[in-house]
Image 1 (tube, rainbow, N blue to C red):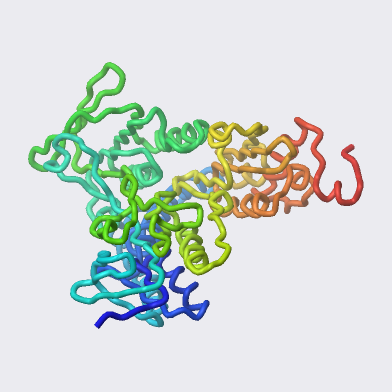
Image 2 (cartoon, rainbow, N blue to C red; image 1 turned 180 degrees about the horizontal axis):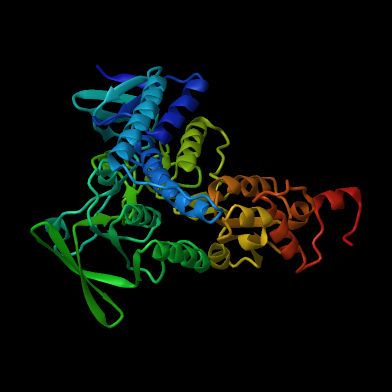
Length: 470
């Protein structure tokens, strides 16, 4: 017998869980459908949490080198990879148990969902109807079409999370965040690493100054960074794989023990049979309007499947918004700019809030940009963490539209920038705002002063008080 719900959420990861919570809070009868694999979602099981657990261990290795510069010699430091992996497993079990406990309050059906009508899905032999559907099926890896790659075999980031024996030589295919993070991870664990990036720079979506800073730190760790590399083919022979690539006019072959495929993820819409629901899918993603509605207004989408950045905070936001818009008389458009923040967990770290300089150019915005280096901040010098910079971007009126931090604790420091952008602060506001001394966060006041000095910028507080700039 068919069952009918107010909302059926397909996918129980971050976006699906957030959607179910929002529906439940609104008093709706909600059903969650999750595939046959482990519950928890990509972030908990195979993404953010386990990956960053591993990276924290090699970051600690970097700290050992840093403290030598402040007069502390750590004798006998060594890496215990099985202990690193075991710690990761324990934390994943902890996070998973918490998520599963929270999922227990919802009706849950396990299995692969497919649409059979505009308002009905099938999960095995069971038919489920709902007034609204939220598709939150996440993302998946699609290997590039490289001759010999499938036959040679490769690791995905999922596999690295369980890798106890570190190969002596690794080729990393892809220079995005995952590729850069794991290239540094392998290098610090003693592997000879070659990172092959097809674009002219690492982190193709970041500004060039950021990409160059990350390339420099990877090279300092011994990573051979090759940009503009076109991979010709891969050949497996015994325990080794030969990767042949061209860079410029040269053809080069590297011989490694393992390949890490780090070419990113794409939205997962395979098997949903969207045609049955009159839902249009674009290039491996669900086509949605600004309100997260698909071409069938009774079906909305959230999270990685909509083809934006694969980030947890964005997944949670869109999951909640999709439920609100599903029944709203006046739906709200997704404000992606407000949630535009991301990070790269290399050491030094990269964190971005708001727009990048290149994004401003693409939009045709007239902005002013200033950098301030950490080596001019006292706390950075005394802590031996003087590598990197903060870049602040302001519009013509002085309102801050973007901040990039490259350096120590960037991922935590960016929280101030998120708040500044969220509340519409100007560079005058930040220049006038007190900052604790000595602290790394002082750099925000410094760069705001640098940026404000290029124009007659008045803070919002001064405008409200009737004072003029001096």
